[in-house]
Length: 117
Picture (cartoon, rainbow, N blue to C red):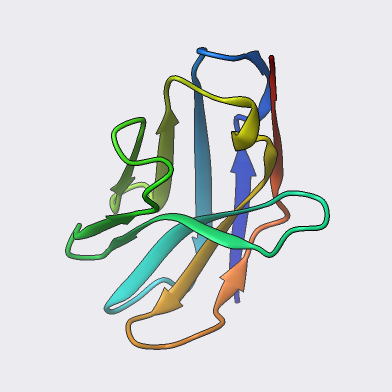
C-alpha cells in the first residue's frame, strides 16, 4: 500500500556531496516519521536522520553538521543532503516511513553511496 523509492546515490570523492531522494506513493496519512538508514556490509542498519510530519528532526552524531534531512509533504518526498562526505559514509541508504511511536513501517529498496578516499 505504500511504496518508497530511493534515488541519488552514486560514487563520490571524499569531501564531495550527494543529494538523496525518497519518493513515497500510496496511502500516506496521519502523523508519521520518515527516516534515512544506512547499512554497510557486516554492519547493523543504523539511523542516519529522521524527520516527523511536524518537521522535527533527529541526526546521528556522526553526520550532524554535514547532512540535512528535509521533506516536502506536497510531493510526498524526503531528501537527504549529504555534504563533506567521508569514506565511512559508504553504505546502502534506505528510506523508511512509519507511524509515530511505532516500529517497522515501509522500506525502500536502497541506494548505494560510495565515498572514495
